[in-house]
Image (tube, rainbow, N blue to C red; front, side, top):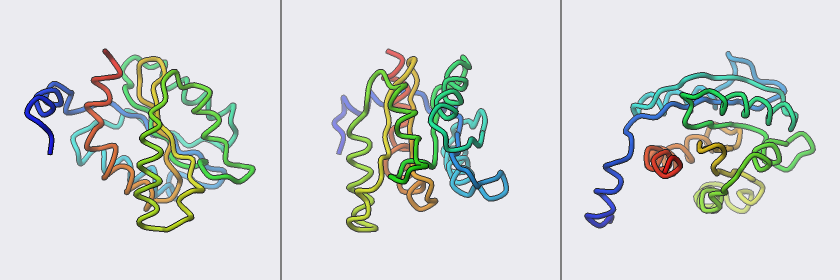
Amino acid sequence: MPSPSEREHKQQAPSSVRCVIVTVSDTRTEATDSSGRTIAELLTASGHHVAGRVIVKDDASLVRRTIQQQLAQADVQVVISTGGTGITSRDTTFEAVDALLEKRLDGFGELFRMLSFEQIGAAAMLSRATAGLAAGRIIVALPGSEAAVRLAMERLLLPELGHLVQQATK
């Protein structure tokens, strides 16, 4: 349970932040992007604003450029990607995001894999979900699975999103 000073600290965080969703996939379309749609629905239901959604092929330089373009928009506070965080030869989101990060939030990936382990067992170790800061903004890289996206959003990101943005801009 948070202490009174922790609650007061979090009360100063914005209750609504502007997010962009980047789906990384060689096969998904707007119609089949269930993970991107889930992120958008959960953000909106929590009072956040979805400033845009984009689908990009799983190519590290393309993913990196796309995220950089989103970070260049003055009103974007958070970029959440879905897909490309596994270990196959086509999974390059981790490398693209990691190259951009100025500060890493290692705890995000650790907590995500711990929660995933509770649901799917040892296969959770295959996820390279990550998060951190770049250009004073939050970047999060989630797996492409809708169940994984829901887990990360509901248990980790949504409870702390405003607080993350507040801290990133200090």
